[in-house]
Structure formats: structure tokens, C-alpha cells
Image (cartoon, rainbow over all chains, first blue to last red; front, side, top):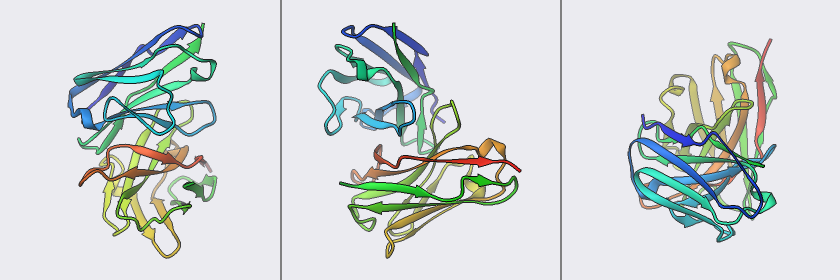
Length: 109
Length: 123
């Protein structure tokens, strides 16, 4: 099983700042099969990034994804108030077919 | 606009069977372009993939849950279903139904989610 470890667990920043979230895999993950999701309280997760770096439909361009192999990054260039949420990375392809990281909580400083 | 809606009992007794339905509207579950799945989230915790199904009935299960699971589809009703047997308190979670878009023979991420339904396992 591929384990995804996200860091930091909690990130405290102010609106307007840049956020960098990390997702490290225990084994190499195909870049085509690494996704990021945003989840706000009481809501379902929303797909932000697929294929490590492609933005999903209607996702603002302040969100970007990068990385390969075992190290992937989600960057939010300038935080808006609505960006404070929990973020999950997810891989596909290894048994179990899908696994998620434990999440990074992005909170307002 | 595609919508997915979970339904089913919110309370299940230990050792009994959890049964959920996902109704898909605004699109056809019989499309060859999509897989349909279940993901759960225990209160205050992270996400766990439960299993997925293709409209033909082909299924993929999380090995940690496989022995207790059945996922099925009814294309005539545009619905798919989750049955989980012998539930315990550890199965208490919000259960989401999801869609994954096919890319060749793969279906790597979940682009649509239902709002989720909380299932509590308790006597």
C-alpha cells in the first residue's frame, strides 16, 4: 500500500500570503495519478488538481500543483478568505486502488 | 448539472447490514466514460475509499473491507448501491458517493461528489 504523508498538519497563514502544502508518497506515484482536494466544514471534498498539475473545472489559477515521483506540492499563490479549509492529496493505481493523505488544515493566522 | 444524492438509514445496529443508495441525476450512469464509487469519512478524520463500480457491473473494492462489501448498479433507475455487512462502531462515518472519469482503462480521481450521509453504528 502506498502511504501518503501530508505536511504540515496545520498551516497558519494570513489572507494574501502564499501557501505551500506537501504530499510525500512512500513509493513512486505516477504524476498522472496524483490529485488534490479541498474540503470545507460540512461539505464534500472538491477536486482541485488532477494529474499532479492540471486544474479542475472552475478552479482559480491561484491554485497550482507540481511534483513527481514521491514528492508533490500544492501551492496557493495568494490566499483568499474562502481558501481556508482542509486539503487532501490522493493517489490512484496501487492496492488499494485509491489512498488519501491524512490532510493539511489551512487556518487563518 | 450532474448531481449525486445518497440515501439510506442514518442508524444501523452493530453486526447488521448498512445499505445505501446513490441516485444520479443530470447524467447517465450507463455512460462508458465514468466509474461510480463510495468514499467514507469517520467524524473528524480523513477520507477512505470503499469501492467503485462500472456500469457493466465490474467492481473494485478496498481489500480491507472487501469481505463485507457488495456494490451494485441499476442502470434502469440510474442508481448504484452499497451494502456493508457485519458493521461495527468503526464503520460510523459520512458516506459519499462519487464519480470518477475514465482515462483509457484508468479512472484516477473523483470529480463529482454527493453531499454525503452520516451513518452511525450503534445499538
